[in-house]
Amino acid sequence: MRIAILEDEPVQMESLVAILENSVLSPHAETICSRFYNGDDLRRALGREKFDLLILDSTTEGMTSLNIVRWLRIFQQSMSPVIMLSVRGSEREVAEALTVGANDYVIKPFRPIEMLARVNRFRPPTTNARSAAETFGEWTFLHDSAVVVFAGPPEQIVELKEHHFSLALALFRNLGRIVTRFELLEATNQNLRTMNTRILDNQIFIMRRRLALEDHGLHLQTIYGAGYRLAPMPVPAAISVSA
View 1: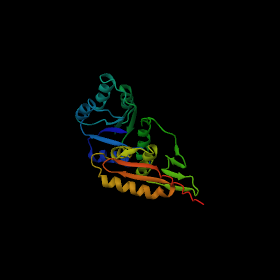
View 2: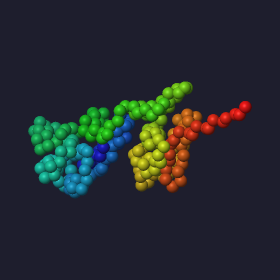
View 3: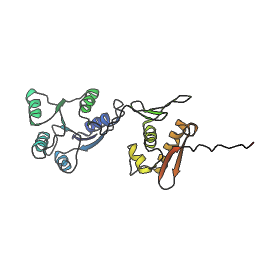
């Protein structure tokens, strides 16, 4: 979820960003916040970028938050949700903000858990949402808990870190096919520009060891210059014994 925040107080800005980006209350919901300290800067950004949510303080320099909402609704024909922040909370001020097109109004100082709950209401639905579990033969991936279950025998239940879980899932979804490093980085939502491939290789090594892939008949092959391929191990040919 991409959120644009308009707030001219640096302390307030960093407090809000910390709640939204690092909250343990939403561990599976990635949030990226863009900081704006001036209304004019935000308006220019809105002309070239799309955000899933705007959080606007009512008392910043440049274009006012109310005028930004008016501009969005009338000239941009944008229905991006907007949460207004203000130290003022009179009935008239709240009504005015909602009338021009704001979706919610929060009075400062905000309460962190409540603020996060208000933001979560506007999270866009996941596209191509998958079921809570995916099964590949004897392997089942439980999305909500980042747990992988091998049916066995013997049964094996492994709880993975989220990026290890995403790596394994990407490989199982493409069983027998080469999965590039780029695709693996994309699957784990890791930074494609700054991520060191050695770090990715180390994550693959840890995931492979945790799931004991070779012990369960799967071979994870490194394809030089390309990526990785997960495939069933070949069944040894039967040896015939002549009488």
